[in-house]
Length: 210
Image (cartoon, rainbow, N blue to C red; front, side):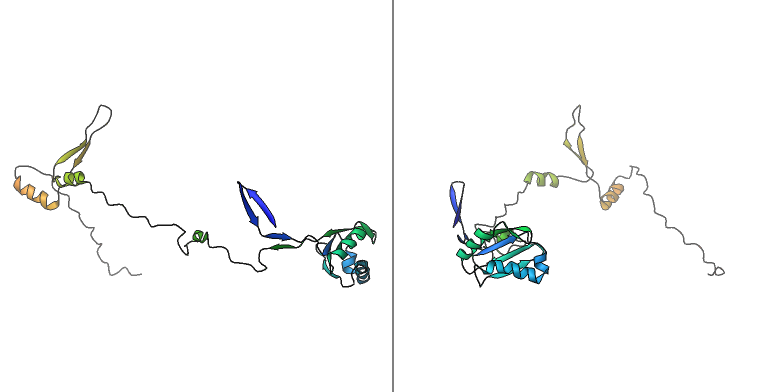
């Protein structure tokens, strides 16, 4: 069992290593072993002398061979005698194959601690509470000022200074209010409103046909 300490707290990791492995890994094996059957048989016979039931797994792309023994004692004896020995004119290197078991032999689903990171979330996170909407703010001073606005009047919102201009709002008159105002103020002269003249359609000529 392997333990790691971080931040004053101990965290236990469920990783187990076998103390006595029963397999060896032969590295940088010559390519002739993978292609020549007689040379492959000679390679296997070196290890069968330690365990007649030994099995082999050849990995040609990695130039490696895994040798599986029946017990760890036979694997240790084979490495002790054959490591860095000469085979087919090249040095043979043997290493123990560590078996690592992480948790369960089956793939377990992830813990549902952080599933709220999925968009959209399957469920709210732990401790989440819905926030209440704040009460709307009604500015009664603004409503009162708007209700006092009348057509044709102007209101100064900001008084001008020597360095800044003043802000004045002129309330527009509606069409009905302006017409009534014209009738009331007969003496006042107002410029006539421009009339939009529609474009005349050209005359039809029957002789021009395409």
